[in-house]
Image (cartoon, rainbow, N blue to C red; front, top):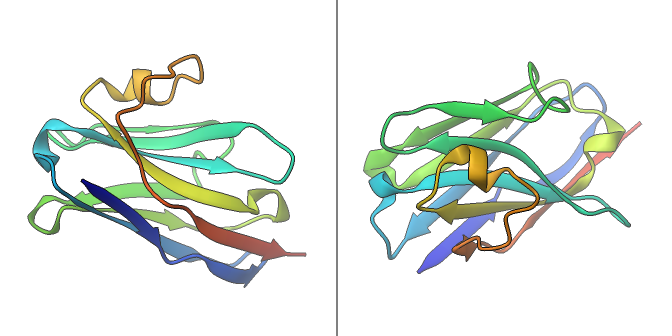
Amino acid sequence: VQLQAFGGGLVQAGGSLRLSCAASGFTFDDYAIGWFRQAPGKEHEGISCISSNNGSTYYADSVKGRFTISSDNAKNTVYLQMNSLKPEDTAVYYCVADIVFCTVVLDTRYHGMEYWGKGTLVTVSS
């Protein structure tokens, strides 16, 4: 099983980035794929999730209206389009996968996440 996030980098405030999460080794259509981030000195924050079998999407209030999650099931890839980036979006971004509902994936009380990918660093300069 492999989850690999990539596409991070340095961007100025107000700019955009698109992250990708490539998945392999499990039945992609059965899983919820989410994005977490961890800023320096802070806890992990679940920010977005998509249900691969029906396309339902979920967002944390901190990114709602600025970030858009989408998936290409043929490529087993999930994308996170990040617009209007702010310095407080600076963090390492991780993609995760689990067979539970997205509402569970994004619940910080849930500690049973099945798969975590390696992160990609996003730095937003002011």
